[in-house]
Image 1 (cartoon, rainbow over the protein chains, first blue to last red):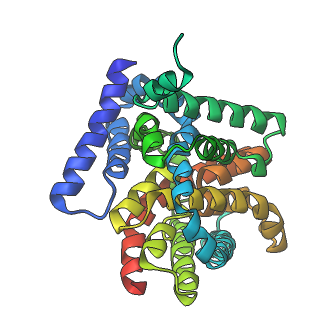
Image 2 (cartoon, helix red, strand yellow):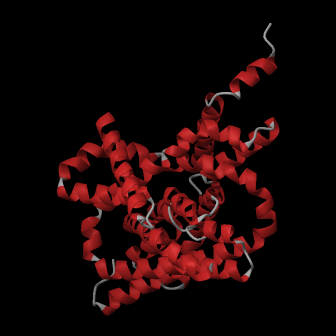
Image 3 (tube, helix red, strand yellow):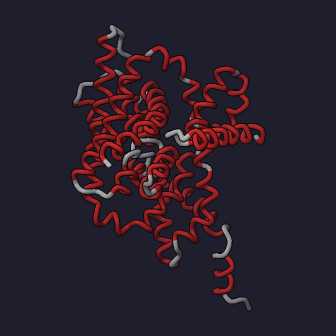
Amino acid sequence: MIPALAIILVFQLIGEVATRSLGLLLPGPVLGLLLLVLSCTLRPALAEMLRPVVTGILGHLSLFFVPAGVGVVAHLGQFRSDGLAVALALTVSTALAIAAGALVFRAVVRWTGGSEE
Amino acid sequence: MTDAALIWSYLTQGPLLWLTATLIAYWLGDTFFRAMGRQSWANPVLCAVILLACVLGLTGTSYQTYFEGAQFVHFMLGPATVALGMPLYDNLRRVRKAALPLVAALLAGSVTAVVSALAIGKAFGLSEVMLASLAPKSTTAPVAIGIAEGLGGEPTITAVLVLVTGIFGAIIATPLLNALGIRDWRARGFSLGVAAHGIGTARAFQVNETAGAFAGIGMGLNAVLTSIIAPLALRLFG
């Protein structure tokens, strides 16, 4: 467990250092995510070594954003004044994004002559 | 006899109390979620947040004090983001097979999610901080919080917006996609994963295994793409 956790933290560390020193737009952990995919592709044995810890972490993914979520307490006033605009932006754009993604997916499958699944 | 106030002041000085409270609140929320048959509206994080907000309000505890204990849980967002690479790695073969429609749908869904939210927000005169917090709302929480922090947004607002986006997307996806006549499970799942991250992915898995797998791919790819699109789109609207 400890080696796997250390490797995951090293990916994040490399990601943070690289994005900061190169001034990249990506958050460091996202670069760490890409490094993990790349490393596992190059060395499939690594994926099996990391898997138990990764499964553990991802199984409790939602827990980790509880602290940030509680922070809404500190911003209740802002939500009272901007609530309607935020709700509208959020709902309309989410519906549009689902529709756009699905319609484009279907259009490209048909255009390239692929079959539906 | 020891004064209860003394014990309380001891507890509020260290991280133990609020770390424990965070775990218990999530545990209760998760129990409630299971008891409700895993319905999207009974989201365990939302339950835990409401519960903790009530406890903080009743005890007159500031968010700063709370966060001193909760920061250990918050820290795990980084490693969790790295760990999201694993499902992506597991599905690389399926990604390659449907590469063209995936890339096109990813671009369409991701750009629509960011740009339409910013356009509506801007039209209603939202502040720049609010727009920056809103931009990554379709991305999985750990990444969205990282993006919002980088853009000068308020990560706590982003966390709540991400949650609400996921719950809303999970509820409307089935009727919306039926109305549009989309029958391909890959298209249905993928678009939901891109627009409504992990909560959408969980919903997709409930409906269909293929939809769930593609929702997971959509969530992972969108985390990477939104990190690039959000700053550019915000510059456009800023």
